[in-house]
Length: 374
Ligand SMILES: Nc1ncnc2c1ncn2[C@@H]1O[C@H](COP(=O)(O)OP(=O)(O)OP(=O)(O)O)[C@@H](O)[C@H]1O
Image (cartoon, rainbow, N blue to C red; front, top):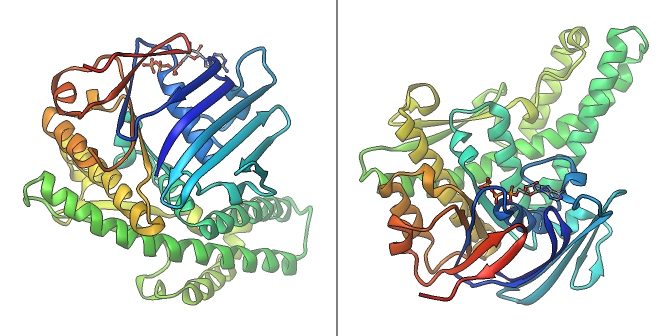
């Protein structure tokens, strides 16, 4: 799939923008704070209805304005699909093919994007929450059911934590109600864990191939899903569900004492190993970067396998963070395959030589100017 065009109205520092893109590589060139990342963010928001940089939608609306509008025409194998999103002070409205969607989860998944920013290089060594977020954002785009289970899980988790606090403060007594919440949490949690395991297995397969290529077969990458549930209980949704239920019952006193839910997918993690050694603790910075790059590139293939189409790739100032060999690998892997948006302060070196007929836009204070093709 690719994004044919984009129209913005009062989004970040874009008062008004209408632009047509290339199916190949689109380069956004400009000095600091001109709006390069804002444009990538707009594409991300158009895809997922939320930003990868902020949880506060109000930040996305141009200062002094009250509503931001994003419109884009998506090209898919099945035809063209207009998408529209309106962000107001009170909430958002999303339209697919000019029809308003009652639920945002029905909207998400039409446009698939993968974003790769310098902070993604931290996916290997950063906090577990980064890796959970990574799984949730990627898998949520591939599976509407995953997204649904996740939002249900989060809502129940919030309720359950509140109730555990009330029990802790002796403001509530009813353990039967806690049991009901535990049961619901276990049901949605089991679905989430099972889907993560299924998709991680496939992602691992693609990442292994890429990693072996980059390291010229010197290194073998593997994934391990870290959870308190024993490996032999991870065989089916039902098994996971029953195990979670039992564990919630066993840990009840501890959870009430701490006033929070200590077990479930919101506490799980993902571990990467190279040649059997944990890259997070034992890997060099180079190995950590190669791992992050392999995982990101693998997402492209996984998304194609799951949805039937290649996603749109957003590369936010990532070239400067990679050495020439890794840059070459990244650029050759995506050429003529994936529509790419790439921000950079300057286009030279490996990138200028390697990218085939890029469409280059200079970004200046929220205004785009297309460079003449070379
Ligand atoms: N809601 C908003 N309304 C108006 N302007 C905004 C809003 N949010 C951010 N900006 C402006 O957008 C600019 C930042 O743009 P952006 O983050 O895209 O930078 P960039 O071009 O990617 O630069 P860098 O290379 O430094 O990341 C800043 O000038 C900031 O003041």
